Image (tube, rainbow over all chains, first blue to last red; front, side, top):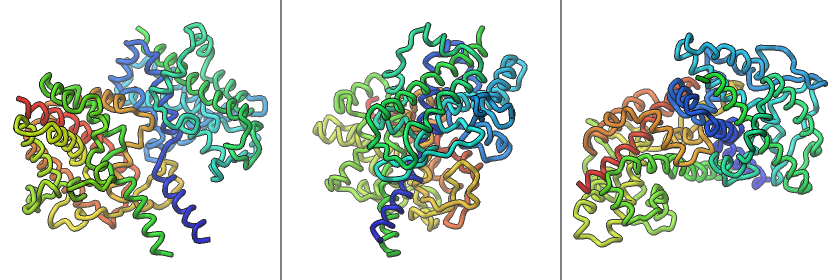
Length: 257
Length: 265
């Protein structure tokens, strides 16, 4: 009993000390991929308004979500989809609709104060990442959560997918992800970026639904069949890249000459 | 049972607080420094450390781990008196400033020292220049809570659901910031520091080693005035202090370059 309690205490402590999630690692990857696909003009403009690189600003929205005056943004990390994978049109509770609002606003960025451009960019960089994270599509009606264990420890569905970039490649950093995975041709990238953020969210809602049937509630990740783990890994890698390409597409469009 | 818990917490705390920042962030400081080395200084580093210089952010800790250290763990700390001047009675074995000064002397007179002594001096400077810029490594006489790694209350999560802050060690708090950008390599850290603070490089690295220590001491003293074991830090303050932490990391990089450029002049 003592040993069990101690192990739980140790695991909890370690978990609080190592913050690595789509809220961190995954967002850095998405932003780094985007940065590599920015035009020189868009990259310079982003860095000018952010005062930092695009990857550095990727998690800002997570750190400030519960601090006034940014509390309203706390509902902008997810997209809600109905049973037909259509987006629920609640502007204040939907990342995709907020992305569309911000892009519209940034179209006339020259008329906006610098602080507004800075804030909008930080929100945009983060929300495009979130929108492509499997745990950030909320289904209405709710689908029962399929929690998962990793080496016996219950991680939970949301946390598992959030931290999946580190699960699949524990030794990689953002550059390794980019160097290994960025193999799409210009034609493929163009196809990925076709459509609007709303359409991308609906596509994600369709794809993510599968994550509820890939494994049963309480399954042990390390004991899942190889093909299931491969499918999960593929989904994560595809989505990180897609998010990066799409973020670059939006930023290039905003800051086009 | 309580004792076991306490020792567990202590062990985990030590694991985290060994380095000032995480390895990638420390590497970022060194990469930033290398961008500003003179040709002579770069060749000194290359000649003695080759391409392994990035491993040296951990040099003194590695010796401690292997139980080969001849220094005390206090070498990772700056010891200042109440006037924020270097405290009396410290040595190169138990104080970061003295450790750096001694290593600088070895590098200045490198012709009289063996290759291994020069290597050790370079590695010591790299490790300690990172250490002293971590605010939690400043101990000030007359400020009792600066003498130990105290705990205070801080919000670590970001969801805003938690109604009360949880205890966090002072050293872990500063270390925690390097976890804000997981996936950042040393190169990415350096690139961003340069982008963000490069224009202020001359200002951030101005002065001598003693001036830098005074700046670090003043910054730490200001924080110690209100942050102690009874303090509960808001999320806003936690977020705002990240900027200070970042500036300290950049200062460490720019000053490391200055100190190495200085010894080969």
